[in-house]
Amino acid sequence: MAVYNPKSLKAEEFINDEEIKATLAYAEANKNNVELIDQILEKARPQKTATGCQCTGLTHREASVLLACEIPEKIQKMYEIAEEIKLAFYGNRIVIFAPLYLSNYCINGCVYCPYHAKNKHIARKKLTQEEVKAEVIALQDMGHKRLAIEAGEDPKNNPIEYILDCIKTIYSVHHKNGDIRRVNVNIAATTVENYRKLKEAGIGTYILFQETYHKKSYEELHPTGPKHDYDYHTEAMDRAMEGGIDDVGLGVLFGLEMYKYEFAGLIMHAEHLEAVHGVGPHTISVPRVKRADDIDPDMFDNGIDDDTFTKIAACIRLAVPYTGMIVSTRETEEVRQRLLRVGISQVSGASRTSVGGYTQEERPHDTEQFDVSDQRSLDEVVRWLMESDHIPSFCTACYRAGRTGDRFMSLCKSGQILNCCHPNALMTLAEFLEDYASPETKKEGYEMIERELARIPKESVRKIAEQNIRDIRSSNRRDFRF
Image (cartoon, rainbow, N blue to C red; front, top):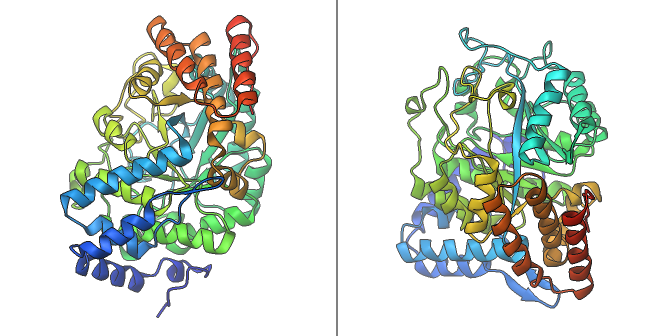
């Protein structure tokens, strides 16, 4: 029998079934233990230091107790502390990105995804390099600077060489004032050698959703194809880090398995990365199962309501305080608004989940991976964020300045966000306002920039940011960064 060991490189030891079951039993036994819950909440709260703020985070057992708690006033306290943590380390910035689907050819049999190999009526499509270029231009014309590329697993149609060619094409496209400055990659688990190739291609974060940490369910949900191998998939982040990628993104697909089990596994995975590599996940995503071609989410009996979903997001923020947290356009505007207040730091905007969807005037549905719930334009998303007192950020500076992995975490933990990421966000917002925004958004945006410039604590940084924004407004000069 496998024994729990967060420092092990074996999936069944760092995501240990017996440990998760013991954790869930402990959480259930203590869900009304007010004294313990208060102690855990106090541990999670940011502590002021001479250089900024510090958080210890929570263990998977502590976080699971909070998730099991059903006391309304304690749940409200979780939400308040989650927002406090997010503001302490990420400020009121929300980073914006878009997914770019390259190919829906796939040889896996995942029962929750319409790209599964047995789906014979979905249109199969793979972008040529010219089509990739056209998609990128369409995304640039919206104002996007950061993409997450997606592709099914198919060694024949989507080999690593194809992915690398697409990355090269994306970075090569310079259209008007548009540039894609960072490409994150969400493709199937692969080899150390291939991760090295992705690193050399200049990717940002490598993203791979676990889907479910319950091994028996995982194997049933992935009955055929290379993704059936639970261990190989679960150990992918260790291979990515061995290949030099120090920013990795975790996530589970909530609704496939019991959410408390998934939550404990997710936090244990973050603990494992910290224990082995000295740095936890750069991002954690919280997708839920959605309707799609050939897929009915009602066939999965583990769906979670919006209140539970909000609590999950808050507890992740309390447990892994320094991670970026992502919610996509899978969710409605209303749900995304709720999650912004409990720790989310990144959102997608104006997403199309179909292959070649950005170049089509009407939103295509024949190759969509899932239904998009939030279908607003990027301009509308930017204005919505500002109306909620969040700074829409298109910043990619840390990636390009080498502030990744533990170097990014050091910046975050030292409280230097207001002197670095904050002005970078304002300068990239000014770019969007000048090049892509509607008059209403532009007016509101510059009012926000004026307010937020005053919050930069270091005078020298503030003056440089002010001058750079003046240059953005008066010329075609772009891409200033600290």
